[in-house]
Length: 177
Image 1 (cartoon, helix red, strand yellow):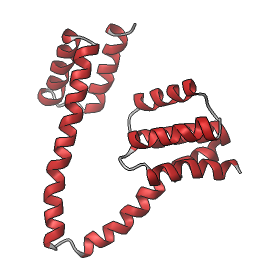
Image 2: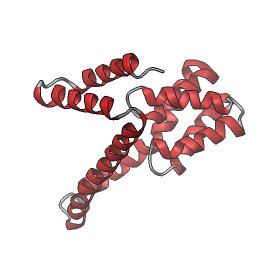
Image 3: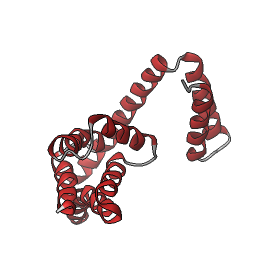
Image 4: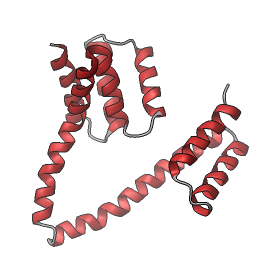
């Protein structure tokens, strides 16, 4: 029964949670804290913080932790599968349609409008993170991290993973409180 519950929590959250990982987190929290009582609010917030700290999409990380905690390795697998299954099925279905109609003016126009929209959304997220950093870590640390990141990626061609690791190390040394 626990496997079905794990599947249900993550599958339903991903079906109804339009907007990606951040949009489904409240749905998952309600189910695992209120409906099933697997975790307290504080414990769920710790899971969320750890999921945000690790690279990659947050929903599968949360699903794997909760699934593993409740039902071991199989529970983790079921949680991750239930998280990606709705998107996987929808993408496979839509890719066939898009492939058949790729030369259609409507699909061309859709692609033309989606790219700048995504760019604007990414800019907004970047600006929000910049302003949050300005308020919370201070101008000096923000400038040091920004300049160092730009130099490492732009001038010295470091892989972004190493820049993230460097920023984490900087934060651990200079921003830990």
